[in-house]
Structure formats: structure tokens, C-alpha cells
Length: 269
Image (cartoon, rainbow, N blue to C red; front, side, top):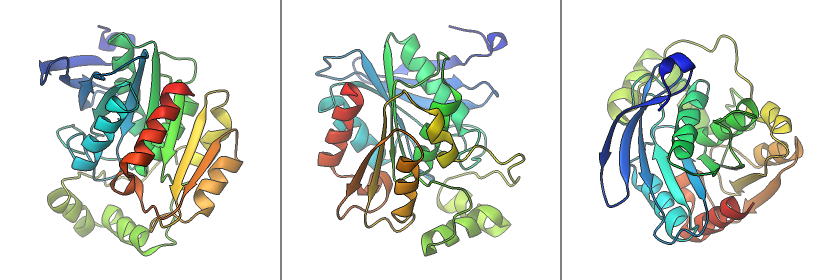
């Protein structure tokens, strides 16, 4: 394993959870502990690992994330790594709403390569979707890079308040009372500091991703981000766009049929 002095993650602790599966604590380049779970595919016919980036208030152990991991492993025929972003689940640190979370994803992708996977694809939901887009742009040419990327229900731009759910989210992350609700009601620890500087936005990241294959997936009943977001993302660079009829928002709304199609795209893109 690489040392922190070399600017890479290292594993803090690993335990076996099922045959071939591992639960680990990774450490990011900015020294945050990130919980991660590795699950080999029972029917894997590829050397691909899929790294799943959950949405805001999610975690590696949330039912919707576990369901996605199971479908990707069984029907996508790939190994799967799930993890909890900083400030979520058993991970350390505080949530920065998609900014420094790129380092969390990088640590998980590097772990997949350390485990022997020559090809690593990333898929993110909502906030995780913005992270996989930014990661694909910022980690190009490094061992933490992605070889294929899918963003599901991702925002195109920062500070969007055009829907009631997003106005509630902004109240939660910008006010002390809201952050207490996040910590104790949703088990999500949010950084009180504002972005300085403002990070590269998802739509600004998209033109930097090619030639890495990119898939944008969005539901036409998404209550958080309307359809101008996926269309803006897909129009900013080289991307395949799936607009899903009747689908709501993120991993909770993605049914097994859609997850299987996404998993198939990730392993074959």
C-alpha cells in the first residue's frame, strides 16, 4: 500500500464481511477516514469494478445503495465498491456538498485498482452525480481516474433553488438549526464554512471528461432538478443522455431494470 507521504490513500483497517467481500477504512489525500465496502461479482466476466457514489444524506449501508450494488454485481457482472462520503455514515469529516468529496471518490477508485481491477467505472446519484463528473475531469491521467462515468439525477450548476426540495436543502446546509437537523435527524454532518473558492461546477467539468465515456441519466419526474439540468450537462460535451419516463430522484427512484441497464453500460462502454 502507498504511504500518505506519497500523496495517496492508505487503508486504515480491513475486515472480511462475507466470502470475498471486504469492509475497509480508507484515508483520503486530505487525511479523512472513509468507510468503504468491496463486493466481488458472483458472475463477473470482466475485470471491471464499479464504484458507487451515493446522494446527499446517503451512506454505504443505506438500502437503496445496497440495492444498487447488488444489481451492479449480479446483473452488471462487475465487482462493486460502495462508500460513505465524508460527513456520512461511519466516515469522518464534514460534508462539503460535492467539493472535497472528489477526494473520497478518488480514494475508492484507487482502492479498486489496488485490488487488481484494471478498469474502474464510477456511477453517482444526485450529489454523487456531481462528484463523479468533477472527479472525471480532475483525476484524468492519474491512478484515481475513471474509465467510464454515469451521473444519475445530477445537478448541472451550483446554488440551484428553483424547486421546493432544493430550497429546503439550502435552508438545512446554510443555517445552524438546519445543520443540527442534518446531524441528528439525517445523520449527516455538514461543514458550516462556505466554499472558497467555488469549485468547478458539474457543467464546467463535462467538456473536460472526453474521451472517457459519459452517460447522463435523469427522470422526467425529478422533484429536485428539472430536465434543463441533464440537457445542459449532455450539451456541454460528449455524452449519452437517457431521459427516464416516470422516474423521480436519485438512487431511491432508480428501479432494478434501470440499474441493470446502467450497470451493463458501465461494464461495456
